Image (cartoon, rainbow, N blue to C red; front, side, top):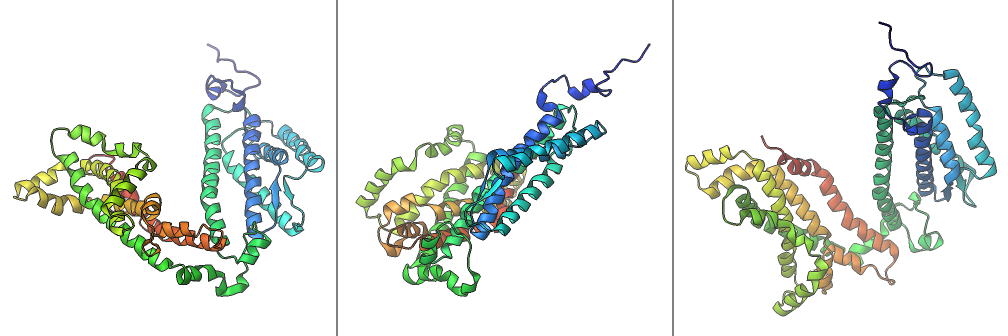
Length: 430
């Protein structure tokens, strides 16, 4: 019996490589330039933002030239796989004329604004070229020049989306924080001269932090910090006092309505807080709790207990019931079992819930803004809102935002492993 014939234009095993698909994007010389074009545009934006923030000089990405440069890079870095290597090198060299002509006829992929120095422009171009070419060698590493399988095509797309996701989410977090910090280190004259200049003059020394010192000396921010810390800690304690027995009862005990209660724990979050604002304001005014920290400490746990119940009941269900049953057989009461067995085993979950509740209480603004009028009782978020005034310099508002953000950020980064472990430990039994 003779061997099956193969096409002269396709290597043996072509049917398996195609996977029965004929989508044109599965050809490397189409998918590669397309991915490269999108990556080139992304890197042009990144290069302009990074260099502009670092130097204070304006740079703008150009859509069509950056797409063309990225497409050419994407075609250039496709692996040969032993197929039509000589022809591809020639085509790649010829296609280099396209981005070159776009540079001459249209405009550069990164165009400097008037007054931008040549060195700044060259630096942006170097960053753009390196950030476009080098990652594409990794993104397109498994994508052949000729026909690709679905797996090879999808792997390249996933690598592109992963890189784009890292850049995008890093940018939306880092850029506002960077602008906030740099603005807080400016003085009023610098902000008026160029509000978009986010560089700093290190020669000013400690005077860079003038806004921070004025916040503590003139705006009473030390008291706001201590008030927010005390309110947040009290909220954590009250939340755990109510949520631990409630979550344990839902997870371990059998009572009528248990299933309905378990499913309805988070129903409170279906009602926006702004809807409850007026009734809360009226009730607190009538009872004399408005403009008091006791009222704030009373109302904050109402917003945190449901999510704490939901998180803890899942963790308690994942704990082995045999350990608790052994404690009951040894003569311990149910409360003693919870205190001596369940809670020590639940420390990761308790740490994660405490951190989460602390962050909610620390960042809460609506209730504090509505219920507190006395500046001596302001929480930190209420104090920062007070700075949003035409009479207060903008750098003071940014400095207040930094003071409100950094402590909880440091706390979260320091205890992140506990929070991650607590959130995931109860998801799998056994």
